[in-house]
Length: 398
Image (cartoon, rainbow, N blue to C red; front, side, top):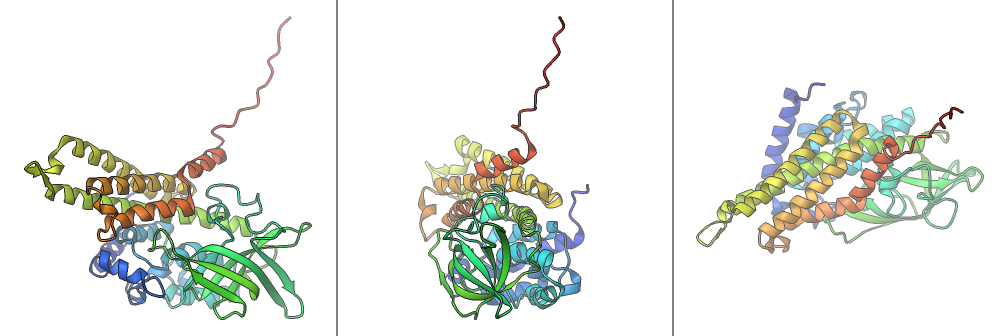
């Protein structure tokens, strides 16, 4: 394993940091989240045209860059530094891998090129607060009725034989970028009790019966929507016998790597801004950063952030470790953002200061993709760390 970044990867990092440094300051972030889309459309198009950012995860044959997960994770570390509100996570990390893995040749040819160019964005709609379970991050996605389970609730799908398609009915309450994405990938339950299974469906923004409403969220940089499907016509993604749950789990591993890198970027930037502040803020005639207690707290945070960075980089090379890296990164971001508010004298939690943005990102990501203890518990369970080996009875000599 060569842990060094290539010249191309360093160029992506440098160019992206330069663009975001000019176009994505705290004031610009607050202005972007208040728009109808929840992000700066002009900046999104610039990132798509100059860097091919949404196409990093798309194969070259479909107009993308065809990079490895490490490249996408590296880019997301920079977007995390700026807390960039954008469709990158929902489109490139969640929807593109599913379309690539499950879609037919015609569906891939139709959808992946505009997704790679940034002209089309997509969102993954999972019923209820079950995104982490659907992606197999905090539990087995083959167990439990997270997609509906044949009972009321979730999203139910039925075949419309007369129309040659499918109809969806139900609700998904926490859909990232669900209010603005022209394309929805909806996880729905079908087959009743006898052939119970979860399938993915494509729903267009102009489908009759589709109702979307943007929700008030803790972290406004991650806009979410409530999606209601009232007998909505839908197109099956791929074939009925496709391994949908396996594709969701694989997507979850890659998404965890991306999220871990993003959280590390946010934690690193929160720490850097806190260090800069304590160098300038004076108390008792000296900078508060000169006090030993403050130095110790910052040193502990530095160790925490660098450990999370190492875990995130390793997971980008081996996505199977994504859940553990995500747990480490979310914990580092939560601790760093909390200490940033304290070391700013409490003012960091006010809307006038940008430190609160990092704290809200940490809390919201843990609610969506965690919590940390469940990420670690499920990873330990899969690794068999707490499995008691079957004891072989010893023969007793008489």
